[in-house]
Amino acid sequence: MSEKPAVGIITVNHNGADFIGEFIDSISELDYPNAKVIIVDGRSTDGSREELAARLPDAHIISCDENVGTAKGNNIGIEYCRKQNLEYALILNNDTTHHPDFLGTLMETADDRTMVVPRILYYQDRRLISTHAGDFDWFLGLFRNTYNAKPDGPETQRRRDIQTASFCCLLAPISVFDEIGPLDESFFMYYEETDFLRKALDQGYRLVYEPDAVIYHHESASSGGGWMTPFKQYYASRNRMYLVRKHARSRVRYALFTLYFWAARMASFPRYFIPRQRALLKAQWLGMLHYYQGRMGRTLEVQDF
Image 1 (cartoon, rainbow, N blue to C red):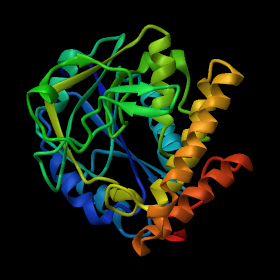
Image 2: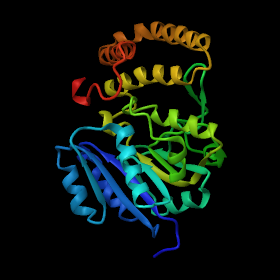
Image 3: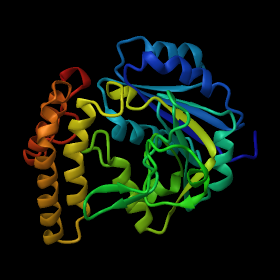
Image 4: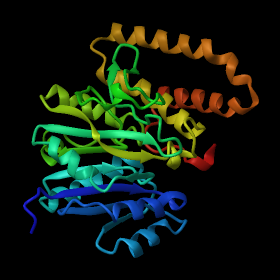
């Protein structure tokens, strides 16, 4: 048995056939000696679950009877890690590829009070950053200093402590999930990581951006492809309002956020009349409506848009 800490690599899959082959090729080449792949499959119907089982025979596959989303799916994987007494969990999107040493590099930075994320580059253009790792403005509900879609360069290759990050890839000690609790499944997907990391940092955990670990990401591949899709617009609009409400320090602060949020939506309204943008407009307003109706969790699928 390796002396390296045991890591559970958790990936949630739902109809990922378009990119799952490259993920399997990449994960098979990892050089970390003490890792267990855990696949949470949300009732895939495109053959991706069967391909994962055939090509990763040592992986543990948990089959669900519905599309559980990333929040619940990762909770299921984390619970399995806990039962197997694994020391760390690596939450990893199934639309990523990786350098063989990326997990070992993350582990060199992690400890029992430190979570770590890598430098994530666009798969299609590896000169650009594809990550929301950075800061978060809790008054306006906006990511700050993330360098997302910016050119990779000296500033993005500097290790630093950060406030939030995407769960596209996150290495964390199992102890943080024991202390903080599971991801909030009301989000279904998008912003559940921002919520969780805020609570973890409030309890004294660190979140470190480790640029020497590198992965590549098919942006929004599981939500229709491209930087913004109607599916992503819907859940991001709904969940952003829910997130800020959860963490607002007062009713006045949340009221001010609400005024800003509505004003920003109204100001951007005209640009959505471009034909290609109308689906995004509909998704945005539907997400906001469902938030006010209390319709959280899984409500719509990619094919609903």
